Length: 261
Image 1: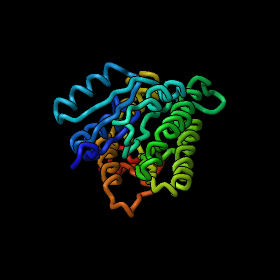
Image 2: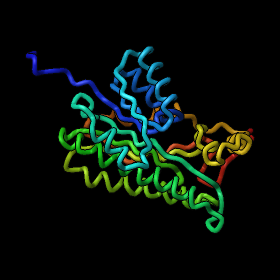
Image 3: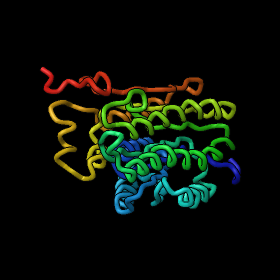
């Protein structure tokens, strides 16, 4: 091998990597010796995760502390990647949230803005910035973390459901737009997952958040991360377009079996 040649090491970019599904994906991909680009709003948690994963697995990790809702920040951090970080094989659009839980007439505008700006616009900003790197190589896989709420609506879920319906639609649209460039797109739609999701939705109310997952076993971040890893590792001619993952005790957004016998 001459001096201009080098072995390509797979790279994954994970947004919202400081907790839940994003953090668990980072752990799985680090175990598999991927280079990691991890983004998040909580710099201390990013630093802690970087140190832990590097110490355990010895992988290269780039942490980027910014908010996906801010187009200028997305451009600054992801649009200015150096050549050794631009060869992104997998983008996991994980950053997202639910904020508030009320009827449409009682909704808080700040909650609505937070969900639309993060779940829809943030995903668009990151994807727009990263896809040119994939297009240049005619290779890549985008994982969009959607929700069962992107398939069905439920009481008091109005704007959150709308934002995840948008993710579902964008996954389909991306698949069409990026088809000529041989870039895969997978939509992941989980049911109830025990992460910080409900704590954020209820603005830090621990009691309300814990009640959501009481008396049944929900999905865990590890369950989702393992399915993502499976999707990424299908043969090159295979793409899993849309994956719905539910706890055994959840049939849809409104039918849940608590205290199963």
